[in-house]
Length: 181
Image 1 (cartoon, helix red, strand yellow):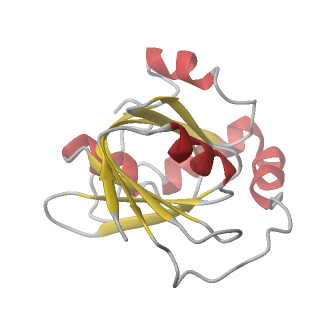
Image 2 (cartoon, one colour):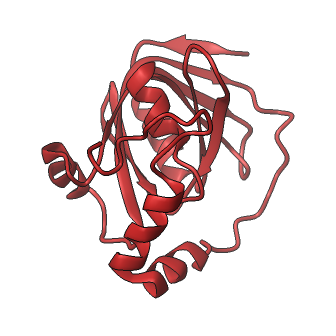
């Protein structure tokens, strides 16, 4: 059954680090709720109450808009292999763009990857575990190379143009802050 914790324990950390995918949920007070899958070795547990993830360029940029207006966020991890488990991290998020001073320091936790867009830092307020017995067993085959190949092919100028077109406003038309505006 479900249990709650005030911090990320060692067993939680080990479980998080084994997962190949996690999900991020965010919302403003009004408008759409956003739920996005993430992967590609893009998350780091920095302490028992702090995680960061490297957000890569995609077709939208909702989370960046949401956390500026309402910093609450939930990250969810599911065991698709091995014993069943679901783990959620509830907390408050900050977003750092490449033009922000803090971005460079946090980016040092990751390997170089084309298409980097932002880094989100989450101050974890609550950890919840639950059984996950209804989650199917799936076998991991490999990381997809599509996003890296796409970003490599676009190059820095092409990525900037894509972000200008697709990542500067939320679904509600609000700014994402991606270029410091």
